Length: 312
Image (cartoon, rainbow, N blue to C red; front, top):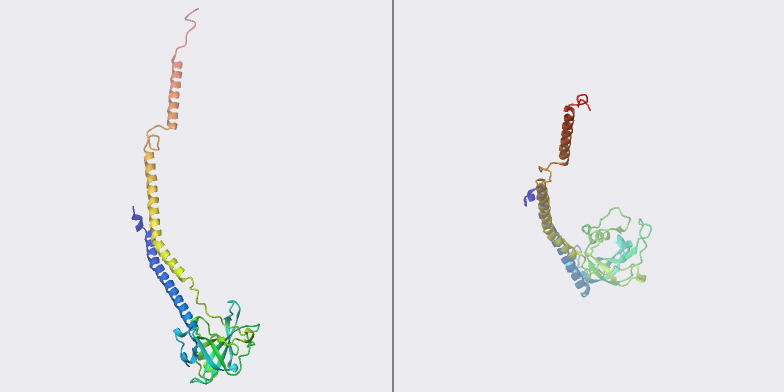
């Protein structure tokens, strides 16, 4: 009954199912790990944003990467803005998630403390791009004099994040916020990472401050994981359904063939001994013809009566 499973079509179908099951299970765990990573990231952001502010020099130093656990931590830095080396970062999105413009990146030269003279890169916020992308845009002035800046510490951006470090850009325009790149143009040590400014507030709201990161949404990864596992479970179920349907179809086909064979051997069937209508008609015609021939022959064999031999 199940010999059809050894056919080429069913062997290929079975092997395909056996390959798909572990692949789908693995994809489900991949989505689960992404969900867990997102939850851990949200927890890290929440802890960092709620932690007490510390000097940026406590968490960073020239040539040093910002530790993962310190990302988004609230930090402070005191110094004077170096607007001569201010640059804009291209292809950045405003808080509305749609408008494309620049981030304003201004070095803050530290004053006082063990890192005096070193610089901190400060992302002062977002401005619109304007019509001419080949020229340095108009940038709202940074506070003058000695100022204490508060913000979120962020790690250096690299091309690993998916941002292309395009070469040949107009003067004072960059693609990445990277302390190593800016240190070469500043000619002074730059603390690793950068500060995303939240205070003091910019005059008239320009530049537009970068909004705090979302740490409430967990994304659809858990739902995707469950879907992949359901797909994996559906493969063997679907295989069994197809096998049972094939068995049923073959049984019905065999029953129809047997019924047809039985009908061929009964009287009145295709192979019976009962004369057909054509044969009956032919036999009847032959008998009629014989009767007519006999009558004709009798009539021809009778002698005619001689009226002269029997006078009236």
